[in-house]
Image (cartoon, rainbow, N blue to C red):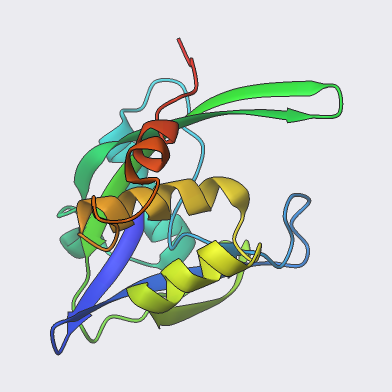
Length: 165
């Protein structure tokens, strides 16, 4: 979930830094809220649950979360092959809201301008790889990446290339 704030005509995203104790991608940058989809719970209800568990976002705020699509990908790492779909959500947060980790999976949260985050994704590997896909989708939907950019269509199409049937 992209948790964002609008301030003085500019957008900012809340970003989590994963705990060093996490077995996967320790210390890397992550979404404000994310998580697997347990059997028997809808995506929307799971997102509201994860909001409270991971960032202390009360239901009075998280009930405004918007489903905005999905991205898919395939990953091959040594002998492992993974196909995955990430359901994307946006949540516009009140300007004064500050997330608080509830489950120990996040070391810290930071509010960063969307333009800066785009630059970090483009030039570094600080973000957990699948998080970059969801943020790139956000960049398309909010006009930060537009058709004037070289490779626009190829990048847009690559966000939905994984055959995750």
